[in-house]
Length: 120
Image (cartoon, rainbow, N blue to C red; front, side):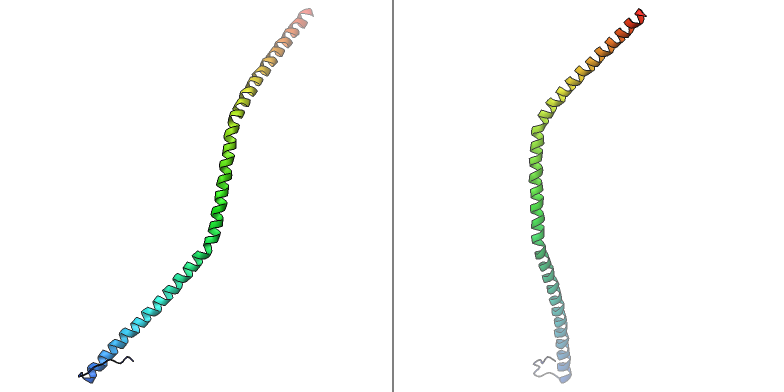
């Protein structure tokens, strides 16, 4: 129980004041306990977050390495595109030439077939 200086007060009043002060002190203790619990929870959260930082940094570095590798690959592909376009044109021309050769061969076959029929 908390003692309070109460000069010149009646004992009943002194007791009520003492009880009121005790109640206030008890509530303050309860609140202090709650604050200590909150502080403990906050400290745990901070420790947990601090433990995550190294793994997050590692993941960040890994992602940065992937970004760098992808940018390099994009650069390589950008260099390949003109060469591939040129190859595409060449293959298209080659295709056209072969189609023309096939057409000429078909014309010869047709001609020879007609010539052979007329001889028979």
